[in-house]
Image (cartoon, rainbow, N blue to C red; front, top):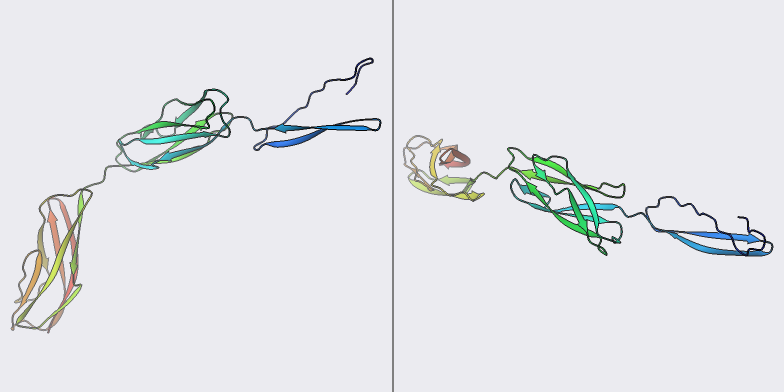
Length: 231
């Protein structure tokens, strides 16, 4: 740098490059036997750094909350652009405002009914960065039930009887009447209802058979199997 005659100082331009983290540089000046320096701190330009969703999986029609975070506190109210990659499943406001002095802002994600599981990438754009997070939108769960029977294997002597306990567990809010049937009973044996009592008369032949217990409610049908040994 050139210091003009009769002047004691001169100005010059220091060119910086974009950085992702705060970085320091030492600027030095040398003349004759003198050497002096100053420290220059370069900070990253304000930009969107992340997007988070809570929850990340919803049933269509249920909202989720998104949070956009900047890499530093906003010097003034800062508007961040938002987008959704699948607007049939989820939509977002066009912008979210990070208030001065804050690093993040929340926004509401609206979702819609879907016939099959769908995903949408929710993105925030500011300062040349556009981080995103994936939201999964599921169809409504169907009311259902499961069936189980214990014991898994039962031995009954001819002329006696034995019992299985048949249990129904409701799923996704299931309510309704469940009817039972059993198949695979050998000749001469009979059975009861939800507590499956097997009567084995003396004429029954010794055997080990697989019984299928079926539970039905409307269009919903489930089955489970147990073994019966007659001796």
